Image (tube, rainbow, N blue to C red; front, side, top):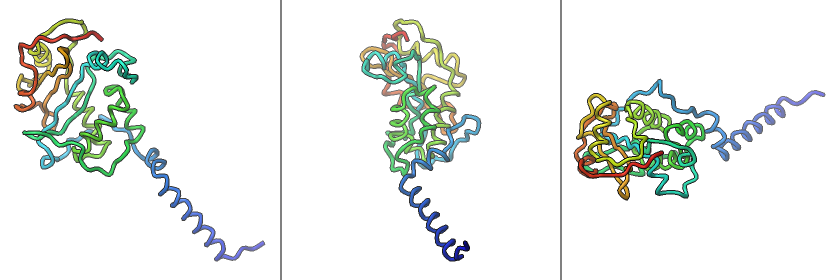
Length: 230
């Protein structure tokens, strides 16, 4: 049986329209297929000098977090970790931006999963994008590439033994093994008398730099703190 040519064209047009309507109503199905997880090897610093002044790489001492949040069921607290990445935060010389407008409402699943080795909580990865990544002027892929590159650029000392330290001792441990890092570029924070975070200030090219306001708000060098064991 021969079909009228106009009928064939009409049916084809209806099929294409149907596919387009489905994709519009289900954008997450396209997003999860086409998005790529961030890779370290092609990291390039972005020219965001007009958006913010520098980054703070915040390294959280995981044993303290899990001790103070014993209801947390993330893989961070199910497994033993030392320092993990809390975040990479755009900063001004005074203050910082937060929760900037963004057309990215949900991170791609692959992007979240790709960060769990250094940010071992899906909730944490999503929160850090919403609060800080949106202020970086970067796409999620580029932002998390930058997070990983920042983490990889810092050598992390071994603080695995449960003990008491002065905040200045912990700073010194980082300074000893990171060339170019000085006391004015790193800050130790505490929570309930325990090591909370080590915050390292970086340029947008991920070079160490001074940050007087961040340093001023940190624990003083002679402050004695407890470092829980993993």
